[in-house]
Image (tube, rainbow, N blue to C red; front, side, top):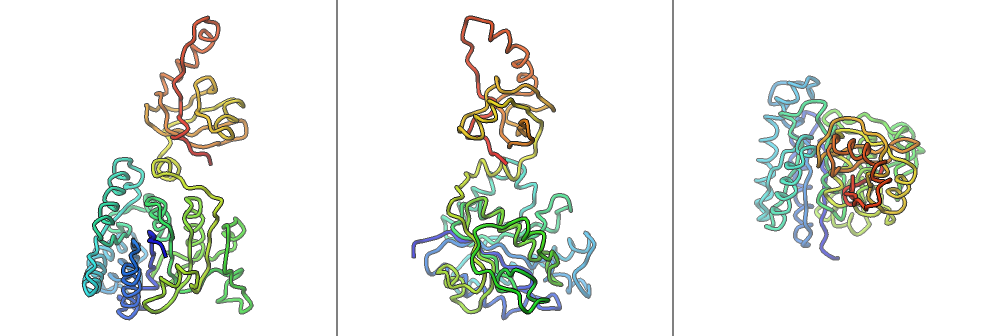
Length: 366
């Protein structure tokens, strides 16, 4: 098997016991499985939940706290306990872990986004195991990923992973809830995550986690859009991750070879950037950027909303609504002037070259 870059996501329910403490037996199982992947020369990035779940019992909470301050305090305690356990266990295999705590701001800010990418690449090149978690201690509700399922999907696309493995306490996806319906049918292979599947999924997670099956479906849909195949399921033993890579995992495989990859820069535009304004384009421009792989030129823009500078990201609208997003080469003021002067340029005998408003390499459609 060729060398692959694998993102493994381990949820709270797969790491802790019902009391919220780190379950050493579960942890050892994961450690040995990741070590086996590394021994097979694969690159591994671990996205690990468990900080809040590991910490709340030490704070005297009877169950996972529901307040923001309670969760953040539990994360502050639990994050240290979690990484301490990883460092101790991986040392047996001469594997050095590196802790990376991320927030939404680290993705939405372009410089932080690039720095995070460079850091992870440097760690992988030096044979270090990145262990990534959301920085629950400082995150605020509106700036969270929602759960580590989505974080793992975004990370897998971010680093152009060959496989995302989401380990959970259920052996894959079913056509209905197997905990309620004994006749529920397991779905071994999928090519897409449909809206009907999302609507029918139960969003409730375990007592110690934040994610449920809907969370995993949303993560899988995101990873798939970034051309990363996904496995959702579970397993036991040191070879469980290797068996998953071989196609023998106890779960659901989700992949679609027809979906093309998207580079890191365009991922930032599509998933993480905040739109600073809106452009409205005519039918000719819409066809050019959607179907002909062309850049957006000033001649196709007839209306500008918002205030933005060169290098900002804006939304682009056509006759039937939102078409996509892109990084502009004009400020809003300069683009408005270009539109105002366009009629005079068209009447002029001289050729006036047009700088692209949005270059095709800085454009993503919805």
